[in-house]
Length: 69
Image (cartoon, rainbow, N blue to C red; front, top):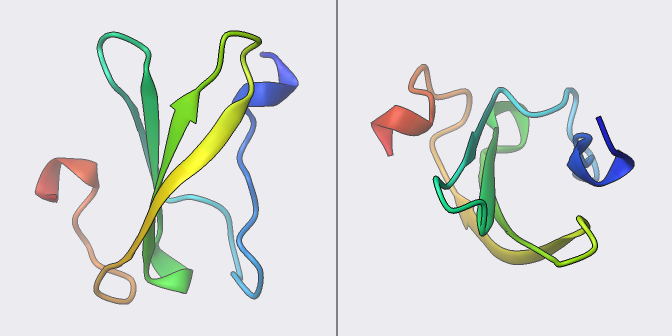
């Protein structure tokens, strides 16, 4: 696994992402950080790196994975 696809930490988050989803075309990666109450979206770059393009609040420690959103 390349370093570009490893989990990214959110400041003050107690743990890493609870769920991940890569769009079928590989253009975007979404991660839920339940302890930080955030859903973060990244655009994949040609070199495999990630650029954060979205960050929205979600219910704290929601039991739903990405399928629930």
